[in-house]
Image (cartoon, rainbow, N blue to C red; front, side, top):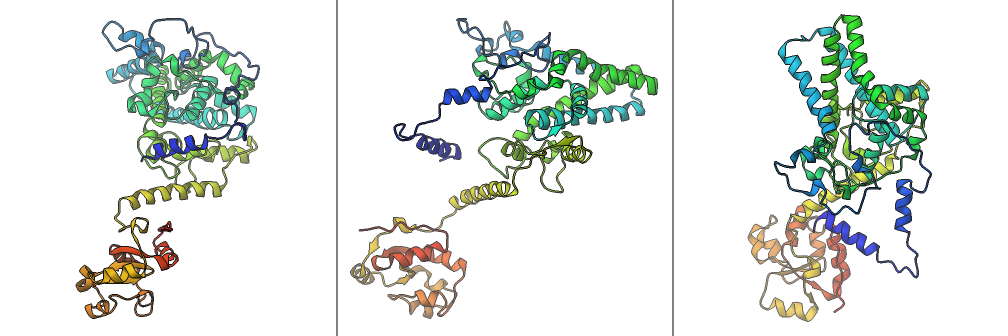
Length: 483
């Protein structure tokens, strides 16, 4: 039985409560609270809608009376393929970058070293504003930041052209709430391309629309201002600023626009998309393996530490993604540095004991899977129970029976293989050799216990307690039979 099936059966069992004795939590009310619909929400909109997503993903007020099948559920054809695509996002993440690369490779705008250096610097500034600001500050409330710091993150985060804080944070909270389900915006189960960028360039199925509570985001005046004026802020931060800076400092306006603007945006977008795709496919799962997130150091290198995704999904409000000294997480260092300078406070960390529990539980699951693949010999629970008369009767036809630890073993086929010699093991036939086995003659090794288990044939009725203690050395449990 798979881990998912075990979890489903466990949940089903837990849900079989008697409502007369134990009143259940109202799920409808709980979901209302989770989506924030119990509060009066500020309406914060921008004129052209969300740049990096579709309104259909979160719009819960769609027209349910339409009889036609939504375009996302229709098969791909030559007549409807263009209707399935989100052309705004295709323009932003494919067509504009493609144009930039064509110009760059044509040689019309040569790349200067100073422009390249500024583009790398601006890549870092925009990228870490996403990780420290959009992600860990606003999406997960892992710490608090002063308004000057939030203002910096809001402006330079927009330079990465990944949508407004409000849209980004909402989508990300939905992802955490519905990970690996149809309501997950970047559901990794639908394939690597879909989780990387397919979810953006294809129209989503409105049946999977979902919401999360973002009342705290709407309460932040910086978030509201950025969302209302996102398009202007994005154009300024992503393209105008690098163009003007490179023009003023290096006399290369076009180079600044192409390399520090268009191509830089493409690179930071693709790096961020890797968190949704590669960090759900490649890497280890040291904390839990019931869902797809994985720790991946390679993704961490291009995303300022966001690649330790298994840890993040288990402990989402921790301001760290990497907890070991050798793991690359510059975002964690930046957040702590802003704390030291008084620009941030309230840094959240999960208790180390809770983290250690997750590691131990996952290691135990791995050991259990390995254990299931190994033949441990007959289980005591499957063996017959003999009394003294049964043992004497069997001994008449099976002379190689030996009692050790309240368990009857048939060592006939092992006599010549016994490391202590044939004479010693022959002398134990028909007798209780427990004391000799456990130190009277030899204090047998763990391997000897494992070899001995292969020869079990029965449990003695008078020694069931001893049998249970004996096999507990190997981590076995014995359910004593009463008859």
